[in-house]
Image 1: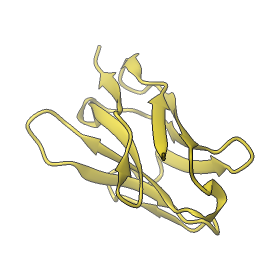
Image 2: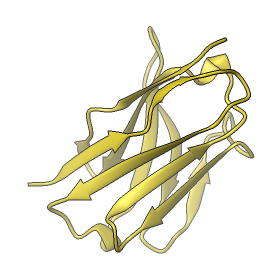
Image 3: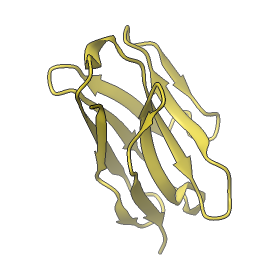
Length: 111
């Protein structure tokens, strides 16, 4: 059974940083593309970043230059380093592979 468990969210001031982690189990992690998505209150879920099995990266325009997605195949974990955070980055961040979703971790950017 595939499971994705996110961690690392929290309250951070504008301009601050967070590192989100998504630990995977029950799957061939190294062969799988992984993605981070977010859903802000009252809004649709949107793509944040993806990383393919070969390391190809893709980012939403709203986070380019501020967020970095990476993966550690040995640890079966995908990361999202979020820098220069803005209040509009406030959302529940979830990771995804194929049709499997984690429960998400809440990021709140506020002074």
